[in-house]
Image (cartoon, rainbow, N blue to C red; front, top):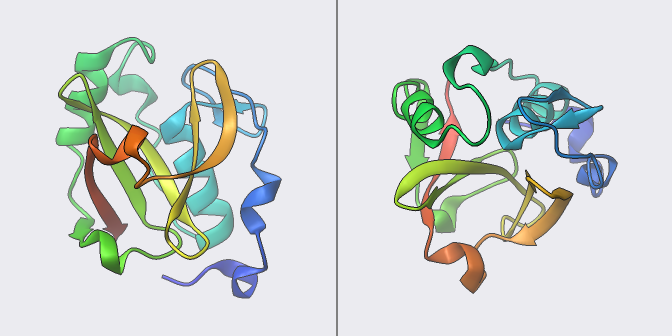
Length: 141
C-alpha cells in the first residue's frame, strides 16, 4: 500500500485535533473507525465500509466487537515489527476488540481518536496500549 502524494512529510498533522463524534465519519468529527476510514480513503485510496448500522453508539461494546469480528475478511495480520504507514492497529478494551488507529511515520506511532480526546498521535507500543494490542492489520481488499 502506498500513500498518495508520496507520503508527504507528516501528512497526519492535518487530522490531529479532529474532534471525536459518536459514529462520525467526516472531518467534522469521527469515532475511531471513522478516522481510520477517512484516513485510508484520503491518504491511501482505500474505501472501507462505514459500519454505522452495525452498532448503536460507541458505548455499544458488543455491537462494535461483533462488527470487527465479522468484518476481518480483506485484512491480513502482520507482525508489529513489519508494520508500516496505513496499517491499522486493533486494541482490546475490557477483553473485546473495540479500538483502532492508523499506523503513521516510522511505524512506532498511531493516529487515533477516543471519546473525550481529539485525534492525536501516540506510540502504540507504549505501556498504555501495548498490553491491549490485539494486532496490526493490513488491508488487502
